Every structure is written in C-alpha cells, then in structure tokens.
Image 1 (cartoon, helix red, strand yellow):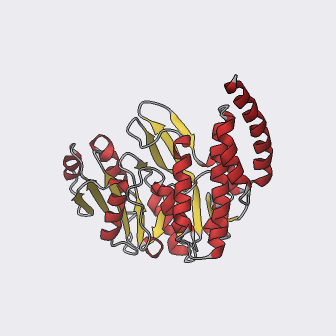
Image 2 (image 1 turned 30 degrees about the horizontal axis):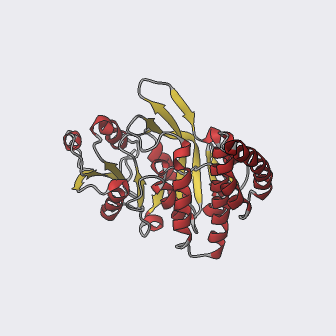
Image 3 (image 1 turned 135 degrees about the horizontal axis):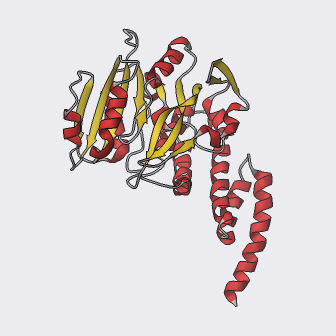
Amino acid sequence: MFSRGLKVSVVIPAYNAAEYLDESISSVLDQSYSNLELIVVDDGSIDKTSDIVSKFRDSRLTYVYQDNKGVSGARNRGLEIASGDYIAFLDADDIWCRTKLEMQVSVLDNNSDIDFIFTNLLRFSDGGPVLGDLFSLIPEILVSDVYELSKDIYALKKESMAVFSKIKMFATWVPTCLFRRKVVEKVRFPEGVPISEDFDFMLRVYEGTRAAFITSPQVKVRRHPGNSFHNHSDTLMPDLYAAYRVEKDLRTLLAKYYLLHIKSQKWSNLAYHYYSRGRHLESIYPYLRCFLLPGNRVNAFMHLAVASLFGVVEFVRQKK
C-alpha cells in the first residue's frame, strides 16, 4: 500500500551488523506501507556493514557513517536526520512483519489522541524454535485500563506512566513502537549506557502520553551470542539506574508518583532474583527498598521477614 499522506522515518543503528542487516533492511523496505524513509546509521563498523547497505538500490534508503558512539548515539543521530511525521526504530538483527507499519499508521491516523503505538513480539534464534511471544508473559496488559479500538488493537484509558507502573515486565520494546514526531523530537537515548537505554528512553516517552498496542506479534527479535544481554536478570540493576536517572527530569508530580511504583517493582524483581537463588542476605536490602516505596509493600514485608530469618541462619553458618 502506498500512501501519499504522512511519512514514516525508520532508524536502524548498525555496528558490525553485516551478518543480519540484509534481513532487517529488507523487512523495512518490503513493508506494505511504503511511504517511508530508512536511515541506517553505521556506528563505526569494521566489518562489511557498508557493503550490505550498498546492495540495496532504493531511493528511500539513506546511509550515514559515524565514529562509534554506541547504540544510543546511533539512534540519536538518526533522530536528528529523520524528516517523517512518524518515527520508528529497528535493531540491525531484528525483523518486522510486513504489515507492521500499515497497521500502526492506520491507528495513529485515525486516533489523534494516541501518541504512540507498540506491538507484541516473538523471540527466535537462528536454526531454533520460536521462543514465544512477549504478551503471554504479561497477561495483565489486557485486564484493565484499556479499551478495544478494533480486533487485536487496544488503547490505554490513562496516561502511559500510570498504566505501565502496574505491569510487571517491560512491554514497550522500542523496535515495536511507532511514535508521533512530537513525542520523541525532544527525547534522546542516554549515550554511554550499554544496557537499559530503551527503558530510559521509554520512561521519558511515557510522561503525558497515551498509547495503543497491537496484540499480534509484528516484530521478530533475534537471540544470538552477540546480543547485549541474554537474560532478564542482566537488566535488573541497569533498569533501576535508568529509573533514578529519569526521575529528576520528569515534569509532573503525578509522573514522579507513578515512577515510585515502577522503582518498587524493579527493587522487588532484584530482591526476588537473589531470594529465589538462595542468596537471602543479598535480598534483604532490595526488599527493604521495595518496602519503603508504594506498590508492593505487603509482598515485600513478607519476603523481607523470611529473607531476614534465612539470612541470620546463613550468617551463623558462615561464622562456624
């Protein structure tokens, strides 16, 4: 489908991405919504990334090279260049389903009160089975604070920060999102931050915005040895650092209040990570931090009491 209406700018940050970049670029240029520009920001690659890009003969594709600044720096460069009314990001090793942009653009075109729209995703590995969709891990996303726009498409009833403060896992993966330009033109990814840069960025986007989402997976996220992290536990402390970084920049007291709930959930996740692995002494401090914040106090108090008991036992055993 070609639209002469609003244009989409897609940014792909690429660092030594030659192995998978061909598939990622193709998944953008083959979208059923074709009124787009694709900006590939080569972040100082020393492999054949530039050769992969040069294979494509498409006037919608722009290639930009810069010295290595990390994924945040590459995305920020793409944001500076982007000219579209809508903005999207795709990682150089991931793939979009063909109708992703068409579905998302339709929602934003027809709902002026929606600021951005995200989708479900599938994880997969080369030569292996699909590892499951994200939303199956967060069923609460459909329980409350949403209403149905059309089949498989829902909108939030409240500000994004309010809704996502109640959801246990990170739902708005950046490669699944389509943003109105006004939402992200003054937001930037934190440079020099190797993990949880997406979480930092999205926390800033949440303030004062309303979102919609598509329950069908429209993005395939590749898992391979070169990923920046492999386990959810890798992001536990970086997510907390992101929340505290963002807190000082939030403009409204209401957003700061909802962020307290998000920090509480993150401390709870960290505490449970230690507790479930028998590291009870290490779980006490994060459970205490969780207890001092709104949202998970009853659960934190119960685990804190048990963890403290087990912690005393551990301490005594270590002294023997």
